Image (cartoon, rainbow, N blue to C red):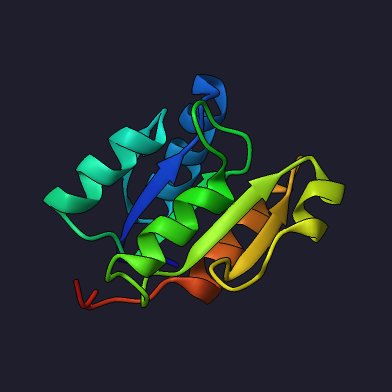
Amino acid sequence: MQHEGNILVVDDDQPILNLITEVLMDEGYTVRTVLTPVDAHLLIDEQCPDLILCDLHLPSKNGDELAREIKNNRLIDIPFILMTADVRAALALSRDCIDFFLPKPFDLDELIDCVAKHIRRNCTA
């Protein structure tokens, strides 16, 4: 099934970005990727995504901090999925700004289902 929507993927691991991009583009999504939270903010300012898929451990700040900044700065309606292999850290995080935790390593079908379930359109930025 082909899907529509713009997805922003934030991860400092280029092979992971490449894999996620390929899988989601094959599903029909438009995917933009960045390696840092700063670049994520720049892309969000250019075009509001329909969903953000973000790693927990990033350079300069973690994915939870990025989610909080985004949700507190006007973009409350963007679903934010946090990916992590660090389950203990994820359990300690506040769920206020995170819509879903996707544990790494994940099955590709699990990724596709998670995105399809959480994506929203018509961002109100």
